[in-house]
Image 1 (cartoon, rainbow, N blue to C red):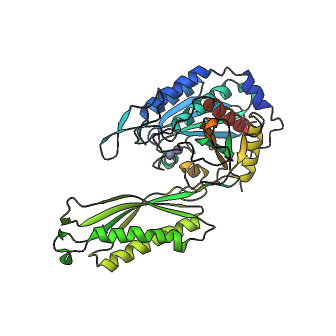
Image 2: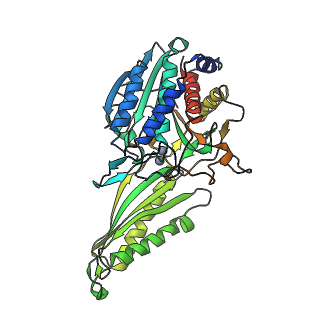
Image 3: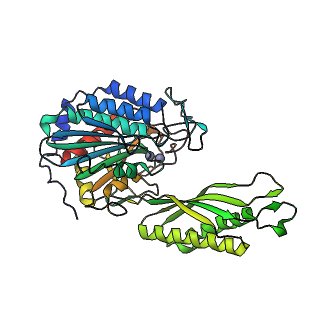
Length: 432
Ligand SMILES: [Zn+2]
Ligand SMILES: [Zn+2]
């Protein structure tokens, strides 16, 4: 168990810092709209990284670009004290935006297959970068109010769950100060001005498996001399849902989604192979391991049942662990944020089945040795409160378009201002 930096006796400090700051509201709104109009795909965040690096340099940080690909690291040393890490992810998604915003994206980028695709900040990472840069600007302008070191991380490739590990592999915690506390936030379909916390589990573990069924192709008129991989894969896809309905305890949910399925070129040709991808979500490493083993068992057994000439190929593409906050740290973050936000804005909510590779920065296991880094990650709202139904309580509401939809459209304000206040208050809670 790692120890947290000592409790700050005075939680009015963040309010004083925010009240005294030159908030430059128009600057951050313009920055957000510029980022929103120029989304880049995972690992290709060159322009976005450049914008963030310029803002961090302007605030007086030592900035290193190109960490783990397009990652940005800013360090602000301000005397003896704890090292507090603040992280934003930077990538957009291959989505054609339909938000109707005057600054909506008409940008394109090149996807991993080499195709030109429309891009959109459909997960709000542009908001994360903006709120982070604004919070750092405020903290850097109030250096006489705190001591310690800020480690500011602009992470690439969150949507492929590879960017956090790429930055760690490139020496994030060895070339730069290793944090005592890591903090991050995600914008979501919650009313603007609120934040949702979870004292322990916030988000699920995820795993993407690439599956290839190896059949034996032939003429569509003579299936008896072939082994049809399409039929075999279809049986496997259907049976995979029984992992949820027949193998998973109701109190420990698992999600199984087959998001892609590709086979064949023509109706009268039985192809040699069929490929599909399975996306799994689980709330613990143990239930994820059980689900992964079940996918192997089902796909291998269906291939054997069909008489496939060779076993299926099953590869793991990405598998970020669950996001499990440190409870004592969450309590302090919530108390600090309550001191700078309106009454009722800071709430406790149910965990989500979404996932985040922010959890990799906690280093609890896997390929990174060393003491774990306690972390807190929370969601904050970006949506017009009038869009929520009368019986709305705390969760993500289906009444507003959510992350990863073409209509996802956070308000620029008050979302940027709230994101800045939440981060500044949380950071000052742990800085001396
Ligand atoms: Zn996302
Ligand atoms: Zn996201």
